[in-house]
Image (cartoon, rainbow, N blue to C red):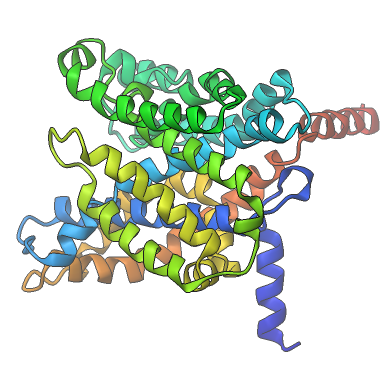
Length: 393
């Protein structure tokens, strides 16, 4: 093994995520990679557009990039799949019952420390940089810490604008054990019809109750994104019932379906006032998931070590990417080529900024997020603190 291979192996080991019972499924992190990279490029596009009003916007690739926020809905579907999976396995194939106390405690110990630390850092940074005074931003910090900023203020958090989707995720975490009881329905056909109906209802209700959603500040809530989470439920149904199919040999026809699914994802996302588009989008997500698990090419691409590794760091990347991109673009805009299209300038900025984003994310992941992936980290921390005090006092 040469030096470069040793460095590569070392980095992959350091950046590898910690999974429950060591059950690592690279396809899931590959899906996370797709979700995070589309969101990052979307926000990079937003930052470049805001920094220069003279760049040409109207080109084909810019229209694709502009739909990159679909990655958030893909994240919701991934959560629907991952969180419903142990419940579905219990109801359908009689695995161990999910301990609800452990379920919520795991969410708390795994996700809260990085979230709280990032919010605290961004809070202090914005005061030091003079963007807001303590009195102006402190109420927003408290609202964000308790995942109610969107409901209270009906807008993105000024502490960390991307936190709105984490509020939606928390709402789903709370409801997931209850929603997952639908897998207790014995009749397979009835169960699948119910899931499909819930996808349709989840797509239709936000349009039917548009005024009420605005009035009650639910525009950035699970009420609007139920369809995406239930898309994850639908894939769970297929994954549990046809596990041998998904773990068997890969097939090229699944790649064809995957290509069509990705195209449909971009075409059907955010079609104004369409009742059918969110349903089509949800089904396209499921087909895309199938392709990543079953396609020869899709599976190969999305399970590459670095693709899966970056996908495994998606939580850290998501927490810090927006603020970092906005800050960096304001200092790299002298590279803008106003005679070229927006997509060309986004590409240039991506070449400059993405390596920096990845490096910062990797450092935070290793220092903060990865240690929190160990189930017993609070006990380990307590023991270390006690040993320190016993040794020094």
